Image 1 (tube, one colour):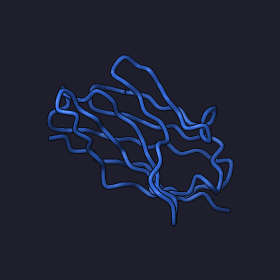
Image 2: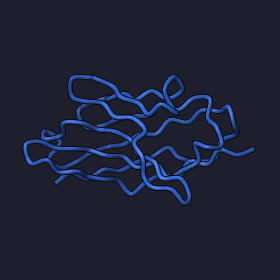
Image 3: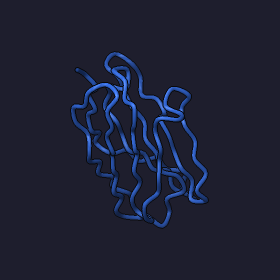
Image 4: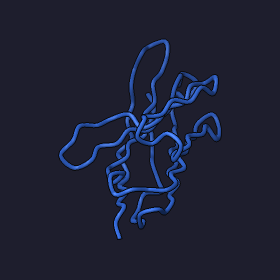
Length: 116
């Protein structure tokens, strides 16, 4: 089992920045990838970015060049979000996938609101 706790959401003006962090606990040695998803009001949950244990980063096209994911330690992942836009408003969820059991874990979510 892996538990994920997010922090860092809030209200920011367009063009501003926020940094989200996620701390994992439990069976962290099984974690193969960690990442971030988001669900905007009325939409389904979509991938924002993820990073593998080897450091390979992947981004959704809508955030590439503005967001940066980093694996700060074995059990933490961060998402630096710059030049935020109103369409980035969503609940952001931390995600972890483990091997060899192929399980997926989710945090409770943290809300990001981009508005003037």
